[in-house]
Amino acid sequence: QQQVKQSPQSLIVQKGGISIINCAYENTAFDYFPWYQQFPGKGPALLIAIRPDVSEKKEGRFTISFNKSAKQFSLHIMDSQPGDSATYFCAASKARPGFQKLVFGTGTRLLVSP
Amino acid sequence: NAGVTQTPKFQVLKTGQSMTLQCAQDMNHEYMSWYRQDPGMGLRLIHYSVGAGITDQGEVPNGYNVSRSTTEDFPLRLLSAAPSQTSVYFCASRNPARTGVYEQYFGPGTRLTVT
Image 1 (cartoon, one colour):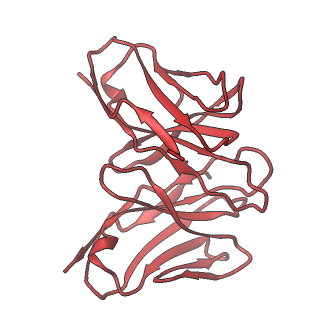
Image 2 (cartoon, one colour; image 1 turned 180 degrees about the vertical axis):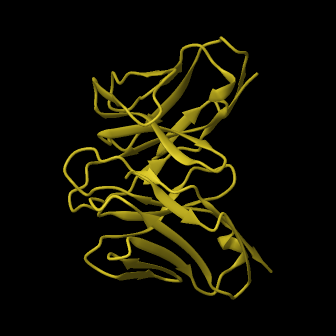
Image 3 (tube, chains in turn brown, red; image 1 turned 90 degrees about the vertical axis):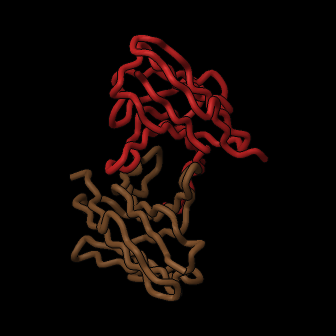
């Protein structure tokens, strides 16, 4: 019930292409879904996040699509650039008062080829 | 602001040794957490704290201790290191979510190898 399943494990995209990473969750109590970006040797950093009251959120070239009925959400990177090469983690938690544990997916290593 | 800082950056231990991973944050965040990152397993929560003097277990707490005597510091202690604790450790901090949305800030990590 606490799992977040992420795919693919790795992804190679040509510069200018669209990168798509998918996640699925089981716990219907989850209502906060962030994506984190991690460069080699660094800690993860928040990229973009969504609440289930909207089906899509866009920030620049990054878009989260959310499908509540399917319990799935995905990250789309438009016009992918070599600088986007990193590991991406989806995550989920409850948005309630107090400390809510963030459950992470297993990560997707993205390589954008020049 | 330095954000979340961790020391050391790298550490090699022998089985059975103990050590403390240091974590500090200068953002006056109430919540602090420790995660471990292993290939193919994402980040897993070890311990967390909601304020000075208050700690609780996460998903994988065995073999680790924490304490929080100040808002700024949240050290992680390995009591008797085992090869299974070879991992990259991340400390994180944040404030309570006011609108259900929050940003968790991660430190740069400590790469630990236990031989």
